[in-house]
Image 1 (cartoon, one colour):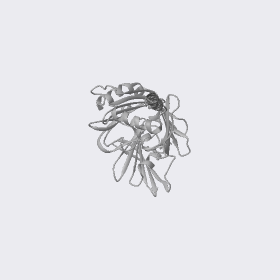
Image 2 (cartoon, rainbow, N blue to C red):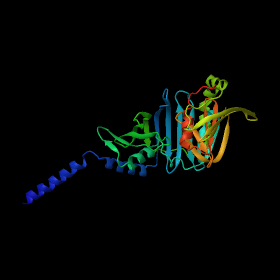
Image 3 (tube, one colour):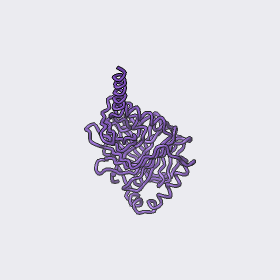
Image 4 (cartoon, rainbow, N blue to C red):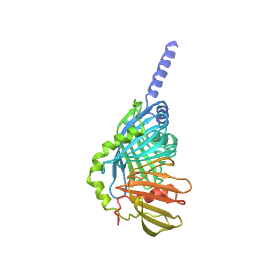
Amino acid sequence: MKRVFLLSVVFLLLFSALVGCGPKSSGDVAQDLTKQVEKMSGYKSKASLSVQTGKAPQEYEVEVWYKKPNFYRISLTSKQRNITQIILRNNEGVFVLTPHLNKSFRFQSEWPEKHGQVYLYESLAKSIVNDTARKFQGEGEQYTFEVKADYQNRSLTSQKITLNKSLEPVRVDVMDTNMNPMVTVQYSSFDLNPKFDADAFDKERNMQAAILDSVPVLAGATTKKHEDSFGVIEPNYLPKGVTLKGIEKVNDEEGMQIVLKYEGERPFNLIESKSKATTVNLVTGEPVDLGYTVGVVVGDAKKTLRWDYDGVEYMLSSGDLPVEEMAEIAKSMFNQVGK
């Protein structure tokens, strides 16, 4: 009887061990991911970012530094144009730096809490954990989740997130309502709990270092060519019930400005001028991902979306348009030629 009892105990122990070594469920991985994000002190990552913009995809190199609880440095470098923009968050606020133009904006903002970012590990983890209807595959050396997307661009509705068995990101594909891949992030490295220099998130250090890296671009012919060809640039997308009212050219101490006025259900003005160096401090707003560049939206009742591309600064102002619509107008102006 004792022998039978001992054999039963051994069998139960072996069975428990085998069960414990079995494949993890979706809930198990989500729980492990929650623990890892809670315990980590930060991370550094490098990835390639591809954004579908209509004609040819825009390719970027993305480097992310994150230090708990809320220090960020995101460097976005266009492969086609070799131009870098930096989103920075430290104790002084949130900054959008455009070093090749010597331009910076400083915000009072809680970015990135309001909207997730496809290149942020904690945003991906949150998407996985919060979507209880998530689809899951745990074959081989990777875990793959299909979950809802929650980004500034509301046309992006779902995403496929692939992690390795250490729960580090491998690849992200974000799809539109027709399941067409619109954004792809392919990771090349991910370093959990790294050490950072004391001034790693300092605005001046990052601005000056990036300006030095931008010198060949500033001296090149590409920027000059676009400055010479500056003209009236119209959006390809307009909200329903909105039409162009008129175009004015205004000259003042700031130089020439082109003002496009739109009327209808949700009127707005669009001002175009030569890009110039500037520093804007302590405005209420947040960065806006436009796919081909990073813009900034400021204001409360009346909002202004500002962005730079190929030597032209754009300011889109409206008291009626939501930020999502303003961003769609801005995106439709990518690679437009001045008339």
